[in-house]
Figure 1: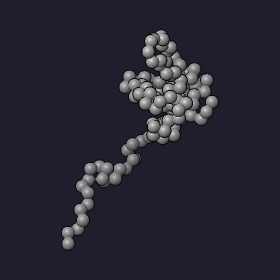
Figure 2 (figure 1 turned 90 degrees about the vertical axis):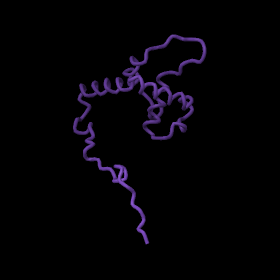
Figure 3 (figure 1 turned 135 degrees about the vertical axis):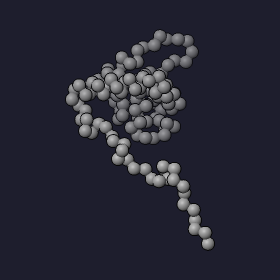
Figure 4 (figure 1 turned 90 degrees about the horizontal axis):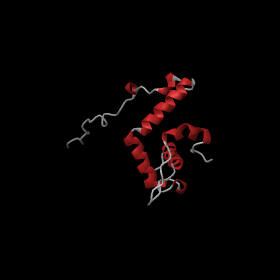
Amino acid sequence: MKRHELSDPQWELLAPFFPPRPRKRGGQWKDDRTMLNGIFWRLNTGAPWRDLPERFGPWQTVYDRFAGLRRSGLLRKVIERLQLQLNEAGMIDPELFCIDGTNVRASRAAAGAAKKKPAAR
């Protein structure tokens, strides 16, 4: 197992969200575990999608699967289920889990302030 990839116990937690699909003619659907490993690699490293290692398949395929998971709401359901299980196991510290956005300060330019004009001579 390589870094940023799912271990067998981790995959066992996620596998029920990805039931096997019947085989059809034409292009074959890429393995869900491989696609998730590619998604996690990209999210953990912060690298551009185009830099995804070849072992995960074409970067466009991995990106399309990620976008589909987000659109369908399945990614949100997976995260909620995992958070619930971790919380029940006492593995989430509520003090560290949430980020309070009221303390994040943006620059004036980010808030839409007018840009400074050079002084007239």
